[in-house]
Picture (cartoon, rainbow, N blue to C red):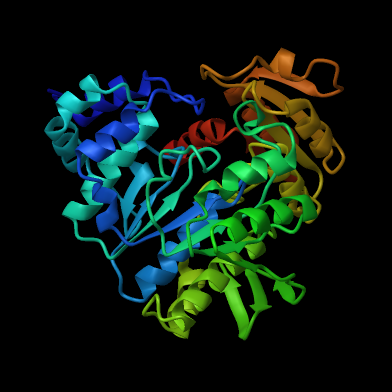
Length: 411
């Protein structure tokens, strides 16, 4: 038995978290437990980027409608517990430890990954707390993901980009097929994707499962001030509390999902809950201001698709703009760095400790960028040399988590 929640977290963190096809122990255990996930009303969110943001916007909308809402997201930003939340409150150490010990024998009898264990704990926790709805964010892909045991009232696919290609395939069509694995028989599917090759895959999978797809239309009517105000469907002057332009699509997608489910009578919410939910939601680590003088922003743009979306905002910042960047070795980091170089004044490459990280020197190999291995010094130098401009720290979500904690300690 575990003596503390941290002891439990330390153990499961060491377990393999590979997305490769593995023995079916996880599904055997789910069956043994009687498929408890069937007791939950769920929405399922997949996609290359924006999953966490869409999940959070939907959570906020449902919470504003008076519902008790569970969310399951990854990776964590603040602590392991933040992966499992109810009404945006992390699972407590006491609750985590209680469930961990309650199912102690199963963690050892079945060859489960950390993510699979987290998923099972979330199901047990949400049932015990009698939540009204749960929004599950896919870990990797969709078809083979441990979250894909639920039968949701809606499947949401944000977008498709090149990421986790060693697991999902080396073409957009292959990746789209894996993401489309969350589409269920006779289900409702919502997507913000607009690339033809991806939409063709979605259409084919949906047709085979008699599912209905709703595609996000372009948002052209928006204005930027201290936040973003936009119009979508019949919702005029919807407001989101961020200046990250890429969040317009994520917010509009959540709005479209909520609006359709409301009109179909699948969600008992109202228009005001949608407006208020969008207004009040904020997803930490996504274009989050962590300091001023100079303006310092962190953003979890952890793949090329995310970097390209971030780049549109970098052009709006007070110049000069310097980016401090670090990434994991399995990302297309050189292309990401080149994309950043095109729209900022300087890129500083740095390093953070992680089993999948890569040295700053190797990250920057062959590129004309500044290299500072110690990320503390990299950030300090950037903020010292660019006092009249803007500093943006981006790359791996694991890196952003460390940096965010660093700034919060200084408050």
